[in-house]
Image (cartoon, rainbow over all chains, first blue to last red; front, side, top):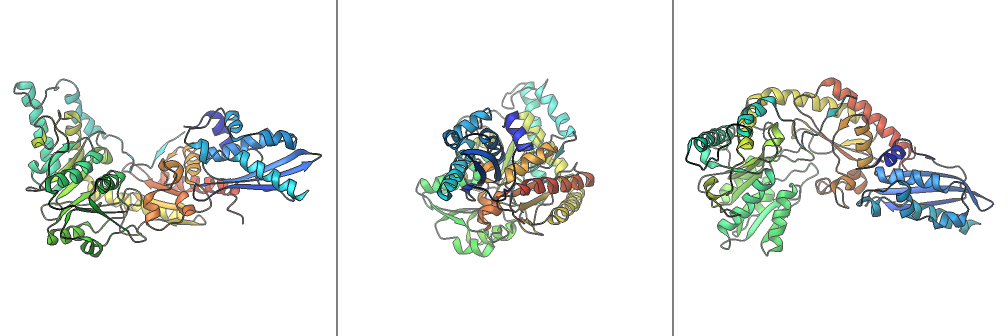
Length: 121
Length: 385
């Protein structure tokens, strides 16, 4: 069902965990659909220096969270805002069609974290 | 890597003895049971013998068995067939909220077609009471369809009591026994059941074959049309290799039942005990009135599909009631019907044990679940301790 890249991110998730004193936090999803993603970012000089995630969800949800964190680290806020859910799925070499809408929400969580950061600064 | 199969509720491996019985009918004995020549007569004889074996396993007469393509078709034939046999004199069908979709969706379809339907709720264990059925029956009721045992949570229904209520009220009683064969004693001459569905591949037989027991004099009409096979109730050339396999599998399932049941109950209880030692794990379904090989638990703070994937990586095969694995946006209708909230339903795992599972496999599985749960909880935003 999942390709090797997705399974690799599922088995070896990058940047997983909580962050102390994040500059921004974004959370999307709900228990009803079965996926909740939380993204923490640390921003310095308009650059995302560090990013972490926590995810409750299926394999696709975990893999897309992990892949997003790799894509975002070191990017400027403007660059990060351009990343879409589809970009994350493409980075993973594709996700099963049924997962595209319910579990592919990492970019949304990132955008919320950036909003949170902007509202504080 | 050693693989451990704990998904016997999905399907079971074909038994060697069953394969041996089938092989001649896939090779040299290829005749059509409807043909008059020697090839046909040889096939007819095998068909008759298989029918006798299935009938003997249920304690009924051979002419009360109709072979089908499996459980789904048997369920459809039972419900649609009786409705065709009786409607429009009466127009009401009763079922439960925890039925397999082959029953539930058939009844819902009839609802859309204008029939009156009642879908009975269940208690926290997934049980329907005979009292509920009694209260739901009206003078327009055609049929009550309540499963023998639930495929997801393993709860065994009080099907004999429900059947007795139906008989007293003069209403047909159908039971989906797909998960029950080989685990529960059937002697349908004594038990008040008019129609019963079964499927060979759930008890070490081949896929693509099942049967419907139709008690004599039950007003059932065919739901598709063609030749005169199966007393016209199920037209179409018989799946003879499959039917022969079903007959043999039934014979073995009944013969092995006492021994197998004892073993499965022991393994099941060992697995439950191990799993419940993991923090925040709850058992779903009835603690005692449940199928010997069924364990269904909810693991809080993690999602079922990721648990399934993690365990698959460790070689363990099982299933989950999470939305991601149910093929819809909602978690299992059974888990929702027993009153679980979304989170608890999302983190559900179903283990269905079989005759070849071992104590070592149970212990390995408990450890694997513990490790996978720890791993997933560490990244869960809803688990912060």
